[in-house]
Image 1 (cartoon, rainbow, N blue to C red):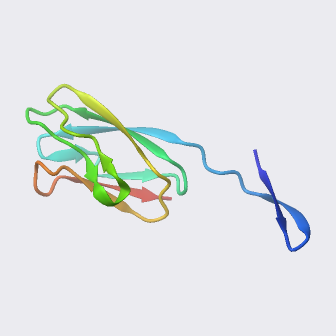
Image 2: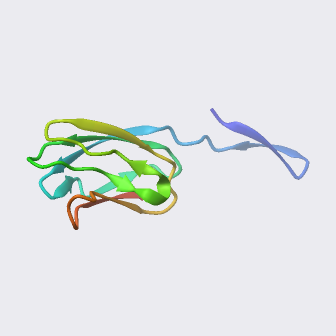
Length: 105
């Protein structure tokens, strides 16, 4: 539903805010699948992270206060990413080079 805004003495309609989305991410031995994920710009995104590998993994982005904690093999975790306006990369701190980038579109 569009919101209304009072601007310069005129009542105007604003574009609706993008709806929240949920995306599945697989943590698999030293890689996230997918490694790049397109998400709606300005919408919160919930990532469901499933560890399909043989080692522990996590998904971390300290400046956004995102940390799944350790995800054991066969387990999963959910995190909600605040609305993004620029690409943001999240990493597994347990495996160098293991990263996923969310790209708002």
